[in-house]
Length: 127
Image (cartoon, rainbow, N blue to C red):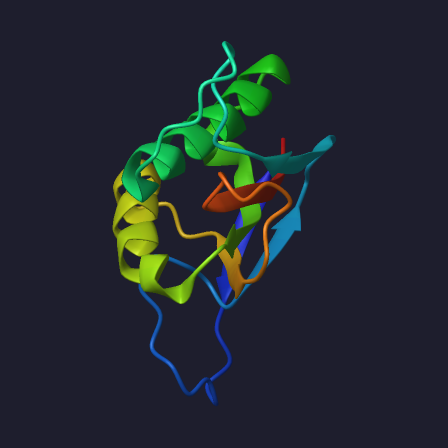
């Protein structure tokens, strides 16, 4: 699989930690991961945003692992935040977890299905 980062010369915002566009070629499988919520296997939902964010990312990683993939296969993800005040902490946790991986991404501030959840993450991976 080859991933080529594409950024239009007319892009208004310099990018770090993500790509404005990715071209993926040579893959044989795609994995579409439904929204992963900040709920542990025992049903526990942490109260603070950082713990919820790490748990949701852990759930994304679990889905990738179940498909024989890792974060290196992640090409796109969308994060839904319950409140814009979490945007900076969301970025910090995401950047820590993804390291130097630059995926296509979108962050949406919206209502979340369960009021206890402060975010939800969906993703697409290719191998």
